[in-house]
Length: 208
Image (tube, rainbow, N blue to C red; front, top):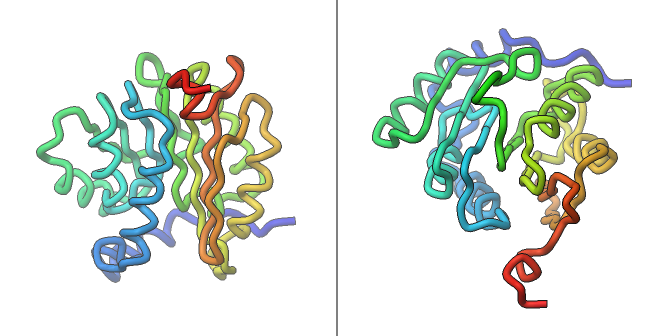
């Protein structure tokens, strides 16, 4: 059994203490992890992407270079403001305040060929994580990409460990994992929305 999900006030408090509370802008660990996340994307370019939990927008900036349209959201007003400043020169990127998974893009904005869950799932309790994964899969177009990356060591404020997030993600109907990057610090999984049958990058380019 997991503990209750992390309350919204936790994030507001973190950003009140520091503009970049997790040092995304300065830590080589974070820079490298973000580079690896984008490098693992199996397509050269995406039509429409969704990044819930964008924080200060460091990963958002990298994703923007690979997407025609990108919606980035966060629960914390300070994080939204920071990401908007960082992406102000990117007209194809929209940054909004949203509390996922209870809130979710709707209508014309609700279909994506890329969803990125970076350092998000471990803040949610069982019901919240189940809803997050269900909504993410439902929002993906056939053949679309879901990328998940999470810290593995235990953190008191997390409702669960990163390994547990990825274990549950692997059991979700409608997804097939095509790549995994595993380190002592974090897990990174790439999954495709099926059907159609999942294909590797080389298969998609007709190499075999």
